Length: 109
Image (cartoon, rainbow, N blue to C red; front, side, top):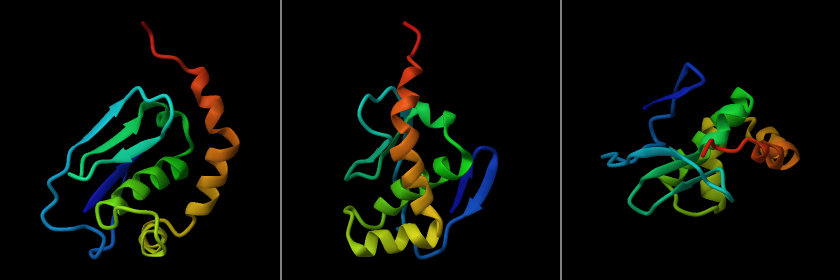
């Protein structure tokens, strides 16, 4: 499966996706999260992710794509994330350090 991130296409490892892939994605105003994955496989992303560095954006997408295979935060889940994004921990640090500042960008009413 290809993931597009800031105009760059990435190929996920073949064992990451679950056939078939009946999911949809949305980008919306979210006040407390960066992303979510429903039990039906629908992915939602906070629109403020456009302000993050490319690596952080890629990590968030990889995180949610991993939930398509493992709907929890177990060691198995983090192993999947690591396969997609070996440097994911730096993105977690970035989000903890700078993520709250992205909420200064408010949607126009």
